[in-house]
Amino acid sequence: MYWEAVKECMNKEDLEQLQLEMLQSTLSRVYMNVPFYKRKFDDLGIDPDDFRSLDDLKKLPFTTKEDLRISYPYGMFAVPMREVVRVQASSGTTGMPTVVGYTKNDIKNWSNLVARVLTAGGVTQNDIVQIAFDYGLFTGAFGLHYGAERIGASVIPVSSGNTRQQVKLMQDFRTTALICTPTFALSIAETIAEMGINVNSFSLKYGLFGAEPWSEAVRQELQEKLKIVATDNYGLSEVMGPGVAGECIERNGLHINEDHFIVEVVDPETLESVPDGKTGELVITTLTKEAFPVIRFRTRDLTRIIPGPCSCGRTFARIGKVMGRTDDMIKVKGANVFPSQIEAVLCEIEGTAPHFQIVIDRKGAVDELTVLVEVSESIFFDQMKQQREFIDLIKIRLADELGVTVEVKLVDKKSLERFEGKTKRVIERRSL
Ligand SMILES: [Zn+2]
Image (cartoon, rainbow, N blue to C red; front, side, top):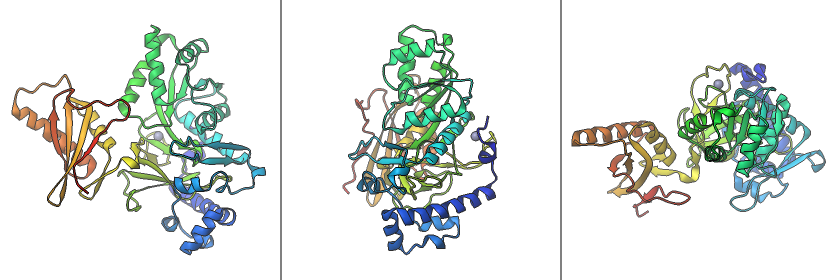
């Protein structure tokens, strides 16, 4: 059930010592080999040789996606091209893609870390693994492919798309583990139903999904429809690709491979650390990457550190499922509120539909946030008292999650506007 028990279950003191040593060597390497970091460190008066404790991490500069783009294509590489054995790139949805490179060692570490994630999700050498990520510059498919081979599983590199073909292969090749985005898995599940195939005739046992945020509700749906144990895994090309973090079958947060990455969660506005359990922007520093190390990389992904140990025995810290992007953040009464937090709370309350809208207004000098919540078909109020109690329950749960009190209004089912594509959740009425 562990791929590398000695590492994955190591004690905190040993881990911190290891992290410190590897961070020191990473800092010297980037200072010597990457002009971007030499300039940044010099500007801030940072001497990598003075780095004595992990607390000093806070003094180091952040690296942003913009920094990487400016260095297109190879400006951030810390080794000469003759040592690079693979080049991949991020999707580049907002302009220029980010190009990343790997040395032989990087590829070895990468497949090893993905092997940990796969093992944690239940996959063994006896499994037949169907990889339905796009093979290409995007890191998802190759990362998981090499990891699955490393375990000794039988890999079917089917790539993405062609849903009916996926279903047929899944049946004929007796696939036991499906690897793709949760959205594609949902469409596979739908297609199986459309084709009138009984899912019990499949050999499927595990689903490892990633590359986009997905909710607990989607997990439940996938587990029921495909009869699988569905786990979440996380990674991004700029940091390595898949294998940065993954869920164990407890399915309660993603273990970070902390012997290769140091993660921080910061307030995206002040850039100060937030306490464990609080949502903020995930920041990652690589410890072992040779070709493309990054220092305090701002992922723009929102998540939190889950406090306390996991019952699986792994000691590596866990992050919660990624809740969205920092671009979605709303600042109200000095607190950072994310629509996905509200969605998560509403998902847990019986009787609310997944449709809601957030209205931000200013009363005097105070910001006021009102959540309009659609009630579902099943809920029916004949008394004002019942309705008030229901509103109070939602308010308490939201205040708990958000750290600020908000107003709640119930609206009739199907009364909120529906959007094709991206929903417009937030109505801004403040004249800022
Ligand atoms: Zn665990």
